[in-house]
Length: 476
Image: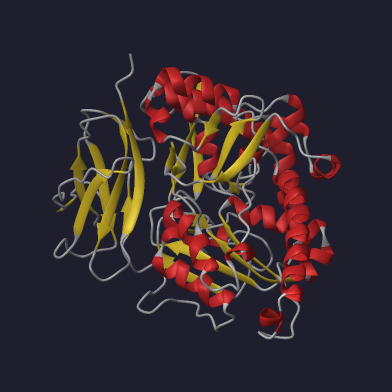
């Protein structure tokens, strides 16, 4: 959801232009309603894209300002990664940003990307041929490198699967926090009506929007995630409908998951960068509340054996539950895709493309330097984690912030400041939380004005962790 969208007919920005619209009910209501996918947009697939793109709404640029959503939390700009790649190419124009209408199906956007990437590669080869000083840099034909965050990795996979010749012309694909198996947080977004998200108007509008979008349904978890106690099920389209989604859109998405489980697809030169050690919803269970089905996120997952069956405790037969960790949005198994070329970082999903170590790994891949599975001093799952309210909050009410994976608050600095104005905040006091069984440290922050806030955790020993949280005005 990191692309700016606008109304083609009027040029009016609908998404990603000014985060203050998220705290302004009159302005935000109209924009969010305008983003609902119409029937033609819901049905759009790769064949639709090859006939010509839909034009009601267009993607104009990658995000240049921070954005936020309940459950999925913050979305940070992509300026840093673009500059990182431009600094190691023959010319800045070698780096092509690809904004896309994330509301629509991954397959549709994959077809658009395939066409755009082919045109860019053809054009760039012509530029290199025309410049003798560039030809002297090497005899190899230029090839493609994809650097993709989150859903972008799914779009790249769709593009290369649809166009085998493009895959052959691709040197490497870097995916950062891509949910190849889906994300349980997607279900919580569709279930926002049953949450206590504040401001309520924003939660209601976003849930109604999400329920119409093929792109959101393409993020549904395809792995076994529905905890039944003695068994674990995959979601069915009917389950998704009970949680607030669209049954037909869910059926198409879950069928794609089943296809990949059976046949798979190998990304050329794949490098996966994965955030870990962050509290991450990995499984779901459900309860009834006032006659409605409520999805409850759980921070554990389930191991699958080589026979594709659940691993169970030998004495009780109960499925083995364990915290596989993740980046706060995507758990580690979903982001791996079976590749062995993996780099782990301590980082939140939204901030990965601004993370210093991620940028370093992207630069190393562009320069064809060796990769390492772990960064220096980063043992798997053993590091700091940051947990912020996934439903946001309101002005005047304290927000609980938690820090995991640290034995002591000594030398640790936790601050909150405005993400829109840069207005600084004071350091918060971290204390051991007696109500947490994981030994988390906790602090409280009370926002004094509606705004998008950036929480920063600096341990002094790791790249600082950051996360965005929205505080809106009280509901009328």
